[in-house]
Image 1 (cartoon, helix red, strand yellow):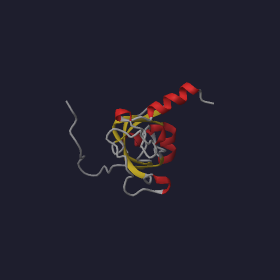
Image 2 (cartoon, rainbow, N blue to C red):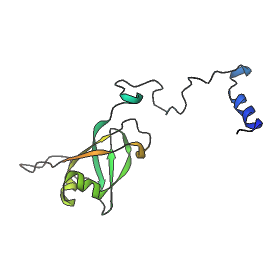
Image 3 (cartoon, rainbow, N blue to C red):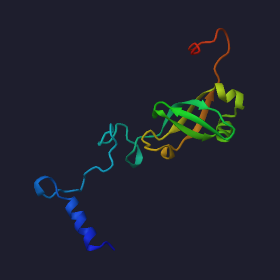
Image 4 (tube, rainbow, N blue to C red):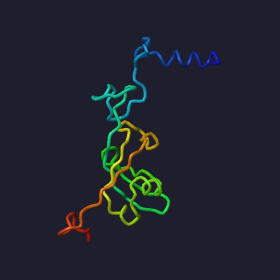
Length: 139
């Protein structure tokens, strides 16, 4: 049960500029910087965008955990994924996994990596015919 002092504090929080009362109903709370306070297009059930398949770039391969980057979600954040889960989901060996083009289904509105709900990992091995394409190694 809230104390009288706490109740008074909540009432003070509801006062706007020049002491005018503010209606807090409908005010969006916790809007991300750069995020949209309105609903996004293509909103799915429950008021959120439908899950989407995105590319995943393997940053570090480890015996227990891999680090992947999901550029379409947050290009500057590496997400930890159990190596065993990647191998089991894709059916690839460690050597094949290191060079595979990965994709995964995620919740694109996730704020934290725990909310991504990563599932349905898929891997495509690059073709080895002909000349190897891609960027030259950095010297």
